[in-house]
Length: 243
Length: 148
Length: 213
Image (cartoon, rainbow over all chains, first blue to last red; front, side):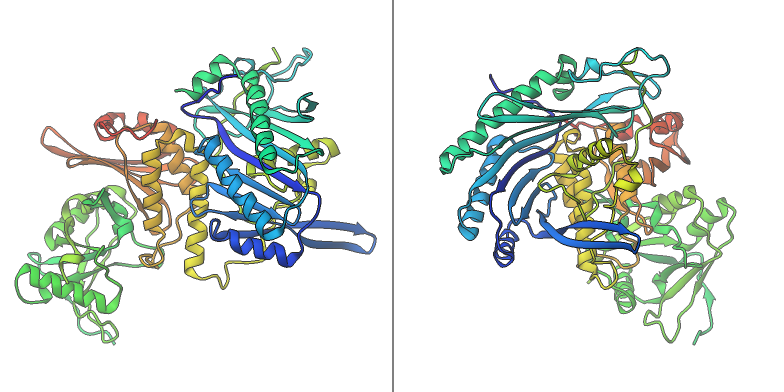
């Protein structure tokens, strides 16, 4: 399928994620983090909090989950965990070629410092936000802009305030599945309504070990994601992306 | 210790120190200053300024001396601007909005700026007054980098 | 028809909150909030119970150097831009970032100013996109940290101070038939065209320079 290029792609987050079968030791993780600081100088630890409540009170346990590392322009982020690496790009989207190239560089750096590890899960996730101009108080007919929406019985009453749909479906290609979320979202623009379309195509297990095969798989996963995206949007939403 | 104060003559000029946040620029060109440069901060009871004619010499020499005097009391960088206004024009502008201000030379032994001046009985809650000051009455601008 | 969705008044652009992100490795803020909603949906928990996440990482502002605070605020403001970057012309976005870099440069920072306000910046961004001017504004900062935007045509100008929650204070001065006229007021962004219409502000906002794609 020929790739479409939009003047204003609705992407609010593009993510490529690797989950590894084994963990890095804390000192190795820190060594990798120090090297990543050269590209992503703003680093914040992401903590996990577990809360246990019993009749003796509440106990909170904190542990390091990952390091969230960002460039000074706040557009590119690497989330570095003991058993994972995710690269995130926020708007303005740089295009797939630039995004995958950056991913290759960071992935190879991680391998160089942390050793080659089996990848247990790989994924490409694009979160899109469709911003629709609409006058205040005017109802929005969302099927006009998106192909995924709730099918509801007529229970009377007022129009919806919000909805959220989530599904998980095997694609039958490369052993991948899609996790799709779609629903209403707060619009950052005045006199607009926004709909979110979050497409996450992942493969768990059976990930090739050879470098070239991993990148080829990612390219295919991205093409599956694109196909799903194009099937989920409408001519009216495409027109918005090219305004 | 506060020394004796005096009102500035109407023909003389007051100078206000303007930092980059308050400078209206179009690229590298200075177009003006934002009216908010004349807004009193919460803790301020009067507007701070300097008296241009406290110093002798040509206008340029006076401005240089003013910049130097201000620098003794606060940081004045080359990217900053001095805004000059005629005393009478400033008073008239404030009067248009019901304010009878007093522009007083107030040197103090603990203030290294001997030309320090206070614009008293000034209120900055009327945006139109601030606009009038920033665009007309107190709007002659000189870049600090040219006054070194 | 139940497909029709009622539109509510949009909210401000939310600033990124640095700090804890529970259980959401490898995702950004939008994906994070979506996953939380799904989680709550599945566990049938209320938002207040499920959201044990708005806790900032240990470092507080106490003891944080000025340079660090400025740097952190700069990142937050740039991250806010990214939320609507697709609606900003790339050149304008680059210019805005340059201005933010200058404004928050520790070597030039004026201690008499409060840090630039995120809420004000949200209003500023939403205003720029809503008004869709073809002339780029001059950008400044009030002592209280509110963003200022000025559009000028010769001696005529409008200055808009951006408050929180889409509220703005506008000041306009222009010459009409040789007389100087001034106006000022406070309103919501979407009302600015109407409340300033008596002053014919179009010439202030219009130019050959495009700021939006």
